[in-house]
Length: 154
Image (cartoon, rainbow, N blue to C red; front, side, top):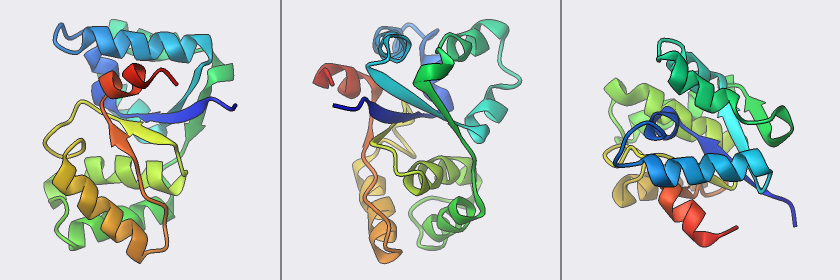
């Protein structure tokens, strides 16, 4: 069985250093380092981590390249993000969140993980993202917290 491809947004990396989210975030990164999950990392996530303290960036750098897949925010993903905004699923001020979801969708990851409960890990918004995805002939996007992913054990 191939390891699941897990898109990580910036909140998950920061969660490794936040007492509230640290345990689940660190367990997720342990699974990446062990190769039981593949970390899918976008250029957007790396850009957002640019100004972060070195210890935050070090968390991302701890993933062996064999268990990390780097992806780009494509024109196709930008277009899909614009549709999420146009359909009112998410506001223009949260365009980077829309781009994370669209990038994960376009690259057909198994799951996107985030600690952003307001704009990403939110049942109503997930329904909206998936409605747009279906209208565009795209697959559904599975969005969970790191705690949910590590609890499932696969």
